[in-house]
Length: 468
Image (cartoon, rainbow, N blue to C red; front, side):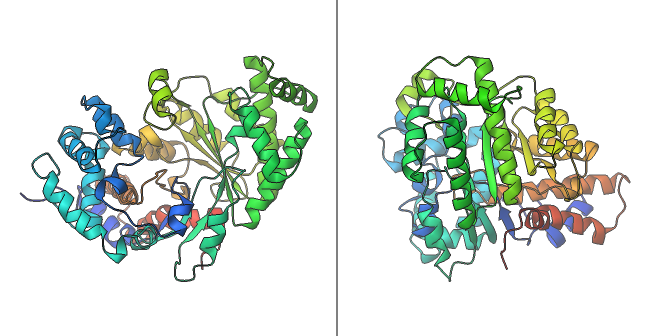
């Protein structure tokens, strides 16, 4: 059978093909946000079999398998890795139309050099073929990153992390990719979670600062952020179910913090007040450090309480939220901008209904830095063909696509760098369509530069991480 992923996959006209093959294809990758394990990178982990590198922890695949009626024992349960792989192989042909179908075959082709379609009949052949290659010396975590031409990896790290493995990576001269931590203090923000008090105690122990008051908490977060900065951090990240913006004084936030510490009830309005105050504090802190602030907005998590009790978080039971965003987002950005303390900011929309809201809000606060406030790339449920094209089209309609900092993997998998290829093909097809329709000039030098900037150069300039 002729491979369906050809060199012109997703490229449907002359202009798209020229832009991809001559300009986008060989650009390095700047993966500024992911969930890879710094420990696995530092220890240069190798993988025992295809299921370990491909299925473990991948809730995208798990959701698809559940939708086909696969028993949980073949997904997260006690079945062997080969049995789990066979269950995934059975699922793949039925993922037609889902990005998993494209991603899976791209990964098989790019990393394992096979064009064979994965299904029940071919599963054993592919299992043997890929496992044999996994035993080679170039299938360790570091080698996979280098093979993918990745210059920067931004992991996601909690303020309590000692960043031991990031420091260890600095001492490996033969590994040339820069791996930087990202400061994600969600657990200090989510004061109504049952784990909040235990987390604050841990944060206190790690920082060696007794946290008795809200002022102590802010001082501790400041201290941890400066520690992260010393280890190379230049990016923060926040996951927000909705967007808080309520007027709140320091005294109000202090009172609400103490209520939570004492185990007293915190109302929804009090929660929003506290979150607003601490996020504004952190935004100003990031500005002083010269960091970029990522805001991932709109995930409603752990919707199946039954499965959450069995498997925990990040196991495939999250979905898109719906809520009012425009006034809150603009108000938050404006509060920081009033005093010129708005850091570089990237806002990601999980609900595509919010695309125009976010894109126009970003346009309100651009100044001095190229693309200072970014409408982030298609995230999670939107990092598929329609979602990526929608995000880029909406950004083009309302802002400047040319200043976009491009794609990221947001993944726990060392094989997911093909998502950058997928994105680049779609970017080139989008611009190629404009050329073919006469909506953009056939100026490949200019358009090619824009493509290369979106693929890599804009992110390099934006984050200011020394990678030379």
